Image 1 (spheres, rainbow, N blue to C red):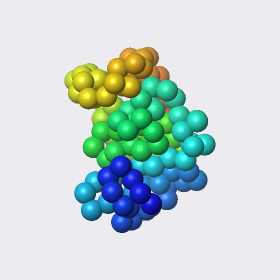
Image 2: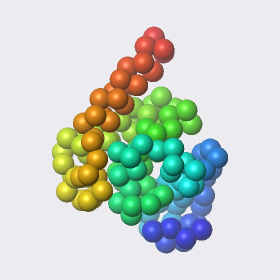
Image 3: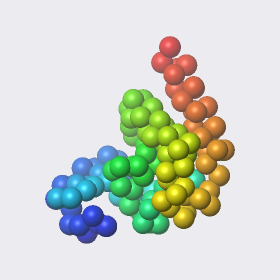
Length: 123
């Protein structure tokens, strides 16, 4: 598989339409067209390549946030903290035109609400 980071050296399937790929330089999540269609606009905006690739440094957090049923609660919490940090610091806004065009404060409130529900279910 070719990726924005080079040829994939390993591919780990997370769920139907969700893979994590690694190359000799970088890696990240790759989504199918069907999974991309299911993802909220605000989270799609995290793809710096404006497509189905979500790199492992920041954009990766969009995938567990969009599809929490395929990840652990801890993965979701770390993804939310990564997203929150990118929104609050302005780093993502400054590095991605698509990120600037989305309502991240609204998405952040919805995701924090989901986290509260998940934590209540675990209590």
